[in-house]
Image (cartoon, rainbow over all chains, first blue to last red; front, side):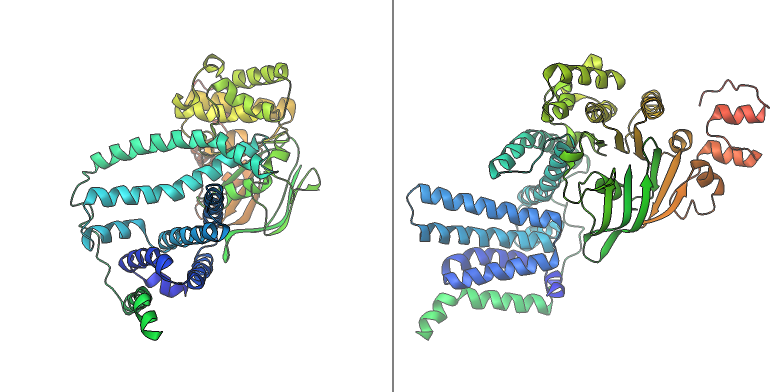
Length: 228
Length: 271
């Protein structure tokens, strides 16, 4: 499984990620739940470091909050849970893509194969690159906080309070980083030729097989009707 | 006292970062933790502070296993200064930044004030107490990190590459302060650094890690004058030791070297 995932090109990963966002609405709920299990198993097999676990944990907490919000606004438990599951599977698809594909490959594919303007591709990839950086920085800042005698042990509320303390330093750092990045881009002559010199990733047999699976699952509403 | 007993650690399965580390750091020692980039120095120091826990083996602080402790439990025993000073700034003024630890430990405001002022004075930051910490220079931020660790009066200080980005005068001032608290107050210093001149001059003991293994445990003099594995370990002999070796003498500072060479006379050169 590890070999297959690493052999998939950025193009295939983008298609899979986009397809998953469609699948969560067209496939039966059991199939969506199965996709989640496959995503989790695959992701933890490929990467089981602290950052990945933190990302999965963060997504789970965010999903829980979304479910709670839906309940508060009067949705039924079933609808809220279904909505939460769909959102989780969609975001997990992005996480799987990020865990297995280099960000510069994603950018190049978006420009070359999807004809996205360079500026938009760069904006997207910068935002994506920001996520692991932000997680890493927040882990260090929480560690620094703990080393200074502030215990993170205790209730969920206490955890949330400790996060509130570190949000501001992290945002300040992010702003400083974006300024440095903008300067560095200018100095390096960022423009339409930015991704031109990177080698193109050729599609392999594994990519074609994966794309066939995407077509098969995406056409579920048609062949499900035929089978009835 | 910090004891590492047969420590093994890995961030990812199958990629060991520390292998069978066995060492004891006694109270009052001045230890330099050395090695090439990625050798495991920072990881070992993180284990001492309970920021991570070993996959196997034990870390004992004063004879007590810290496996169930978190860094906050050790904060008044061990002060830890991170490599990147930007990521440890939590407050809006220099004073509040240093006061963060004492306040987290719920000291009275009078005690907080006393300890913060002493820590700021020690690091030469008193005049900046009301300033905004994020606009300080890199070197000042580093000193702020050390002041924040000092404010809890820890018995051990772990300092991760704190001399980087400091000018020569500030570097000397900081190291002389660390030397003084080590000699006068018996504070244990564990210094992670790539500056071999500082190691030769200030450390009393060196631990060298290579690819996660502890390959040397001895005095800086033995390390730099034994010397045959230094390059393989990613270390370089300090200039003063290299020069001294050419003349067949052992010296930690330029003054010492000159004194040897001119048979006891003081040298005017500043090191």
